[in-house]
Image 1: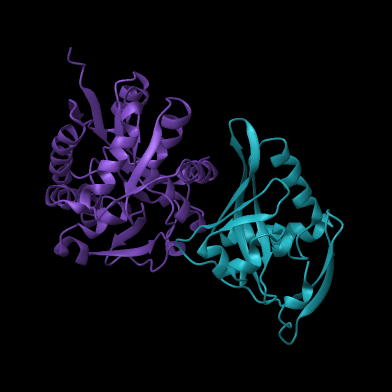
Image 2: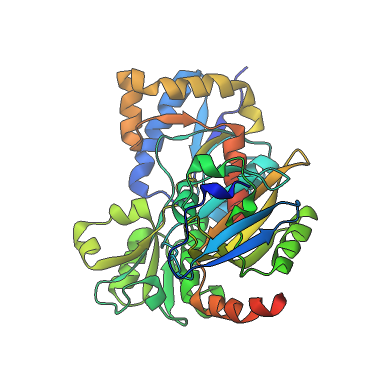
Length: 157
Length: 251
């Protein structure tokens, strides 16, 4: 992960070092300001079986703050927010590796350190029985569910 | 010996006015392929799906919701889509409704939609931010988008789900009395022309003829009658991607 490409956090931000399952780690600046999810959009991405991004749509680019070129070839955990409990992602990977659909509420980290909430669905992509990757589609979540997650997720660390 | 005519059908979510265009298309198609094709129109999705299950369809302009079943269960191949067009959804209320955004809607309301499966599904997804779901609304199914609009204007329903294209085809007088709360910008969900097993040998020729349509006055006239500019070839992976995407939205 190339942390020097990240913009400096805005004043009042926090900083974290995230450690990922693949052994990599990343310094991330976090600003506690929410980017509202735009109405009517779906954020779509695809990854290879290892979780490396192979496709993003324009809504993904717009919400993440990264360019398409920065995203393609990068592990999907580039969006990982330190407020998300690692157990949530373990559950995600265990589910999709078993060939099942995973759904959940996720707080994502933007390039500028701000965050946005999504309701995400991830499914395995099978072609003639062979796994070629995963598709993830995020939609606008309800505030009620976000509030529940804001209360629950800190208890899962 | 003459073969039994192939069967063409189109998704039942099209307004009766646009069916004339499909009859013209079918006449052009038979001449272009030098073969007999019968256009069958089904009144609703249930009867069309039954015909698909009975292997009674050879060529279909299909709703994206049915693409998975057609390809994975019935051996269809996706051939082409109308250039630059995708299925988008408008959620609208009557002009004097107090809600200014989706979040302003409340559970327990009456919702009008057609039996168009992809529009209903995408519309319900856009209502999720308001904690509205199938269990806390009263759904009223209409046989056309004009009737969805009438439901709103007569206050029989509080919110309506429209195929965006159909919403903007409503009369100006009707549209002026309605207010869109949100329009989807999904871009990758679209209808597509799909070829069944009995017509697979004509796939290459058919795609070529479709793509050549804008190059001849006759072909251009047929495109005009359908309201399309071009037909774009759809790669297998493109349609698999759309099916995967639909899978993430269903359930």
